[in-house]
Length: 260
Image (cartoon, rainbow, N blue to C red; front, side, top):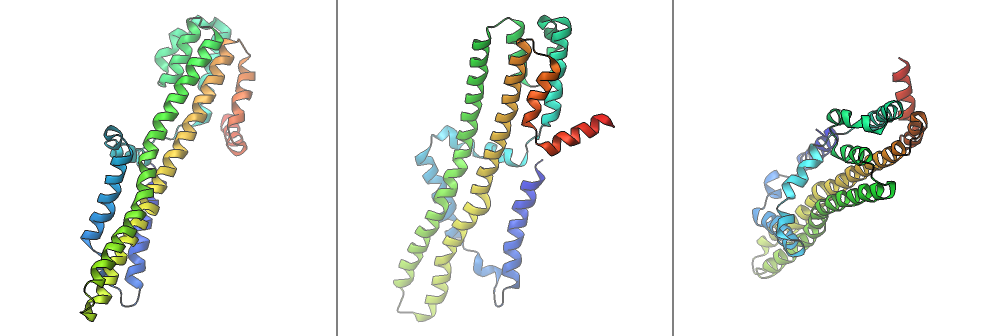
């Protein structure tokens, strides 16, 4: 589970609640208006349905789940695995890698190793692997786009709800006592739209973008590693090449762990 996402979402909600609680003269009841919620959330979802295919929008909850349930793979361990494969290939030949396929859980690594074992030409193998990378990036972008659209349309429907509320309020100008409460309700839709966009939709879309970039880096490591293995490069050279993807601090920690 991604603890940062959970803490961020819960923390943001709690900060809003605490701010309301300590504000002089404020009451929670004044910040609850169901028609405004329907306007913002329902309107934003309706706009997303207009903008994107239904099959994509139905994946919203699955996409959102990835923000909280994602596995942070250790890049150093990935590099160690590739170097280990390189050592086997250098010692026993490329065909020996076929006996190690059952040890590998990553289907992308399996694809690369299998093509290397089968003697696929380097340019063909690289083209296939990079096409797979592009396909994964496109799928990630499609999921992120749903939340991007929600973040874009929610504030707009907040403003629409405010305008609707103001029109209703101005239609009841004959009752001065209703102007203040009417204005408060009208402004709530703007508040809801801002909260949905800036606490939920946009941050979640940004987290998905970060996860996608991390996934692309890992796949790039695999591509370069498998290509180097097929070219018969020295495992130590392969390790040094791939470690350039690891931040210096993490390299130092990995070296210290090996030394211990």
